[in-house]
Length: 336
Picture 1: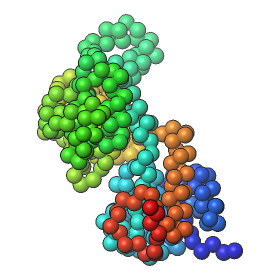
Picture 2 (picture 1 turned 180 degrees about the horizontal axis):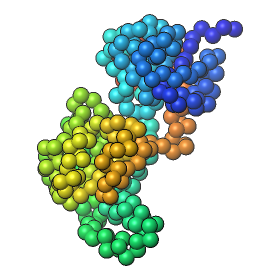
Picture 3 (picture 1 turned 180 degrees about the vertical axis):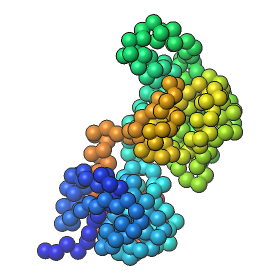
Picture 4 (picture 1 turned 120 degrees about the horizontal axis):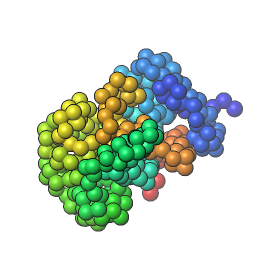
């Protein structure tokens, strides 16, 4: 029997290969999943013309793309963030934008704590020194080294991951400050977070950890002015999105010793340019946008993506719609 619907994973080169769990979910409703690499708008438009539902992680779903895909009814985004999708354009074109908001809380919060400890204890720097045979030099280079116990962690963004990070930080007796104009105060208090203004958080924190989505409001929200407000002994940690921090301002702040160092899992340009000054700084720990990853988490993510695509194809409203006001191209039943 010929399939009525087409579900297509559209992603940048090399990103659309593993789809075992998604395919298994879609097979339950007799729908076949295919995958294509597409690195430009024109490639996406050409290759996704007949797709009813698009699954994507890194492909840029712009207004031009969506206006050129008349059959597309939904875009399912791998993960929590959806900054690669123009949500307003999707709404205008009656396309549902779906994310997986309960993905990787544990992994990313663990990663943030790991980067905090790596910065505080100079783990990478000392590890590299010992491997080069510099035992005495490395021991001497430990100073200055602050403490973790009794220090202050400032959380920029107190959503699910920020709150999970706060919960784990309490094990280290860290005082918790938070900046988030949208979180419920009682919920923040439940996790031991005292909400303050961003300037106060920056002024008082020994570690500043970013946990915000990337949007117009948060783009470069940490820039030159903010680094000047931080302690000279403070570290900044980013497991959110690279462009939450103005990278050129960060480099300048590190070069001028305005802060003590950084732990970075994300960057404004990914993959990072091999000539980026951050890669040459001994007080900066860098990782390849790996905070969300564990085998278990990604299998669950792929299953959830497949489930959401199946719901749309089967005529049901998805569990997690970003643009809730959208008027979809097809009638979907909302479950109570």
